[in-house]
Image (cartoon, rainbow, N blue to C red; front, side, top):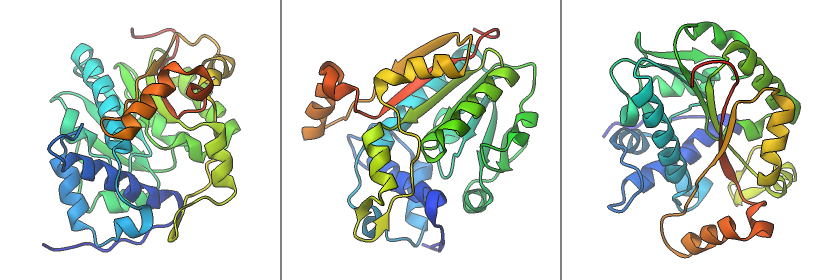
Length: 273
């Protein structure tokens, strides 16, 4: 098999971390996600995943499965809808979920798009835009007359809180009625990364300035985005082993639950239901 060498640092390198976990989960007979495209890319890259990130875990496979379910439900109602994936990296969701009418827009920084396009080719229904999610130029690629679902997997925590707030306000103004799903990390984990958290002896995680505890998410979003139409906390369940019990405890023990990572879905006011 021909392998591809990649050189990435800081936040763009995290797309290899998520690929490591998602592809490894897809390779399991009992995995929560099936993803042949991710496996192909994973095996094609000349990169020592375990040296940097350690043994794979189900986390990013579970996260992808949650987002997949949301997008399937959206496309069942809006088959010609628009899906905007912010900071998509090497996520291969379009191969798992895609219908034959939707418009998919990938937004990521140029280094990430360059790696993505070695394996995933854009076309008229699958657009790649090589800018930061904070660069509003991608707004102009979204048709104004179609239902919109925006996702941000493993992205917002790398931004400053004021940048997250500004982005959400601008998206709400530009895309009324759109859905937006994202994951978030708790404050304690954010602080850990700001101190230089070493995931392994060979990999220091990038800074994650935006941390928020689960019980703070709803009031914070309502403050940032007046007229928010809907907020839902989406389930995140570890599929096996000790952590299955541990994550289950998070959902029933309030003191622990508020300190867990989470996934949220919101809908901006005044538009498509």
